Length: 517
Image 1 (cartoon, one colour):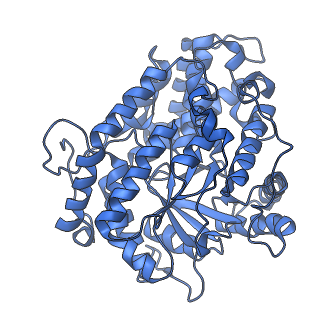
Image 2 (spheres, helix red, strand yellow; image 1 turned 135 degrees about the vertical axis):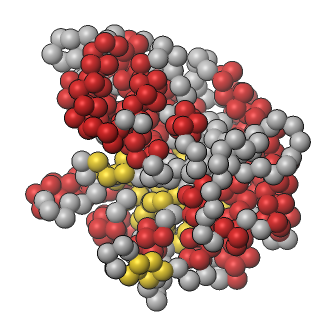
Image 3 (tube, rainbow, N blue to C red; image 1 turned 90 degrees about the vertical axis):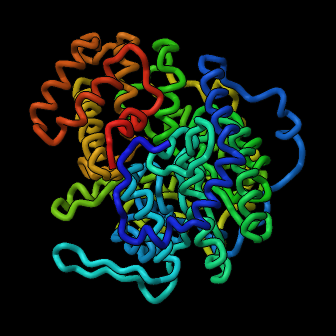
């Protein structure tokens, strides 16, 4: 099952124990085939019209709620996201955010050092035994007081784990999601419960309520095997694919014993909108990435439907990522960006979201201030029903409402950002600051998918030129020459996912094939 080199990782002996691997093996044996079947079902739905499901009307129209949230998940007004490297682990827990999204997915890479090293750092952090000294001699340690509550994000269902061979029969690949979830819950569930917390997760990339049902069955299997009560595990689902936006209620229903909320995963959602409609005609072509904000009509409809759905069912509605990374040298850039972040968080709080995401500790106070102004002494605004919101399928799919133009600068920026990100990804870095924005797999996916879609549709730049494969290839030549050797390894993969006639579903799939470690 493993065709990649499996390097040694410091601390791995504490994570890759025989009982832990037996537990992961039991998850694979119970659910591996079903996972594969659901991935095949994704492909079978490709090209079919999107809409609310008639067969689940009763779920949407009946009265039910999710389980009440545990104490340490009732106030989520600011959540910080980031990979589980040693330094980020400490900084995130100390940041003042209520929650840390400990990311083993889009802000990480599936290099074995990240897969296992992230588990080591989480294991140590939960036991308050994590510290770090940088190459420059700067020391990092956990504060004595309250730390952010950890909510771990495993990989999506689509990504295999190629490094680990569990000796199972058959040719069903091992799911990265089950490895990440299994190792974390096996080692940490009991300790988290002892501390009055619990094993909490963010679930990414789902495309249907049947995939949520699979997660629910995984949770029940794990809880029974570990001897902890059902409902102990809690999950917040990222609504970051367009198919999932039409099944928000059904997803919460399938997970209702374990669900804590939904998150508006704005960047992956834009990626999914492009991906789902990449060959559906010019009415589904988006303008420059930077011009598509949460205020355009189809994105506002998605956000407000999420709030309405969550609060109707007693679940938290979590806002999206503010990806700005403050500059240590440019106060003017910071001032402008801080104003934009403030407006973004004030809009979300006003829409009824219970909290939101930031990518840097310096943004935590801005987010807190925006939500404090609306929440006051309340931990959340679950009591705010959005009965004024009425969203149709057409509203969710009204891509043309974004308006805006495709510019050469925007096209060139897509090339630059995706090339730089992919180069960093191949080196094992999943979250990268580029032009004062935190880029991760989701934003790189937007960039490369837009390029593919513009080529396919023969879209027109605002200067009148048609976007052709030749024009994009020439732009890649120009950008790659300017960036030099740092993108040499990334360039062939990037050209494949942008210039090939066949669209590749995930940038990370060919990238994963290129790494050996």
